[in-house]
Length: 194
Image (cartoon, rainbow, N blue to C red; front, side):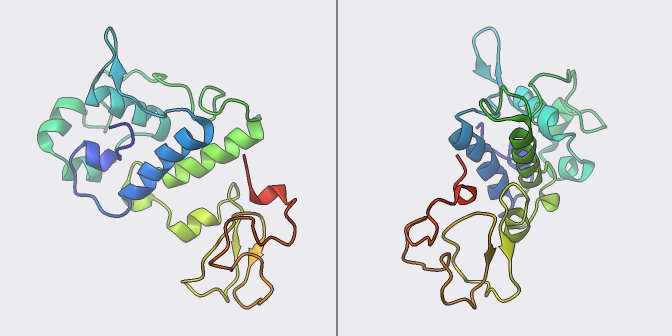
């Protein structure tokens, strides 16, 4: 439940953009060992959909009317007000995404960059989520595409380098290599973030 996208939770139609939301939530869990959402309420910690939706609003903003109109109207009417806010919502249920609680051990600049990346990936409105190419160009990821790259060119590393399929010496385009195995400069820390 914790990884489900807003459109899935309110039972609206969904498409491939749901995967970006799921990946963003999972990415934080894998990268920093922190769960973004849980929807649990006291006293026994059981899951409640409304709590989960409040956590989403706290981190990513209100649900747009067009998404609520497409959702299960029983869920929408029982949970949301006319502004797209869960009824009885109290701001500050969870700390901001940039908080140390979500990203322990990272400095402020790293937290801000990573939170910005997650916000681009996890827009509440699925129509506003960035494409894979746009996400890869986000400053936190730092991949810069050359216009010479065919759509099917495999990327085997992520870093602050320009990637070009036209370069036969490119260290990034060997589809049989594992990440970092064919790197000319294996000491490039920009390519392998913690």
